[in-house]
Amino acid sequence: MTAVVAQKLVEPDAIESELKAIWEKLAQENKTRACLFNLIVFNRYSPRTDYIRSIAQRVVEKFPCRLIFISEDPQAAQVAQTDSPYLKTAVSVLVPQNGESSVACDHIDIGVGGSDIERVPYLLLPHIIPDLPTTLLWTEDPTQPHPLFKPLSELANRLIFDSESADNLLEFAKIVLELKSKNTYDVADLNWARTEEWRDLLASLFRTAERKSNLEHLKSLEIVYNERATEYFCHLKIQSMYLLAWLSSRLGWTCEKASRTLQFSFTSANQQPVGAIIRTAVWQNLGPGTIISIRLETNGQDVYNCYRIKEEYHYVNIEISSHEKCDLPYQFLLGQTTTGHSLVQEICRKGTSQHYLEMFNTLMILDKDKLC
Image (cartoon, rainbow, N blue to C red; front, side, top):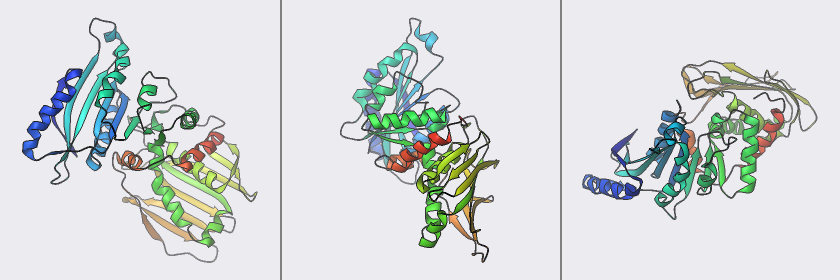
């Protein structure tokens, strides 16, 4: 958890002086001002805003940074047409509540709407700490033009998207690939990070030479995801589509057919047919869209069945069998699925995942019938 200390509305030109005054008081409490990087978050006011704030504050718990949170009010256009432009700023200090930590971080909050949104880059620039990397979390759909996207992304070393915001996954993939090809910043995606545990599981499952050879003879693949929508998660099939596109791109499969019922036909690298299907289930205590299970079967009747344990969903039960034997089942421990963990993961990394970019190229083929 993160505590907010001395939140105060201030005029834009008083941001730094007010932060200094807050820190003079906190110095008496042995709090240390710390910052490893600048984190800029942009979102539009919606039911997801509180969720976005919570994942941003989760980062502060793990890594000290200067958090600049920009919120656009989509209803403020009418206000902007009056004599009172809509632009407000506030400052506070975020104190991670992790034991006896003495570290605390600056938090600058910018609320804006209407024509005043054009002032944001000029207001923001003096408050980015120089010589430190800058990460931009853009929580809106990048396929929709926005006047702040270009100026904010030009300030960033790393640009993190949330593909949950994209109404069209195919167009989202296209724009991310285009942005990466034309710009020097790294790109990342929260939903890609959410599939990492399962990608690690599959990599460990087929780490031996014998099992790697079985991958060449797969005949079927089934992925089940959690179809439990919330007010801030409604595009639930994205993680399962990412996982399918990643695995097929790694194995060199060619997509022959993709249906709106999420059934797919592939040809493997050795010209064998492979069928894949994405199914759904509903688990109330599991995150929306989260992968529940994966089942793979080879032409030689080898079966790899990996499924979460419902009572302890951080654990995956792994059952491996063939027509000759059944291995003893064992469990794979998945990492944290707490709020904000995927953002923490992506901020920690350097560079752009080549697997992520190649997955998008495959995804655009899978999505050729506009099934997402």
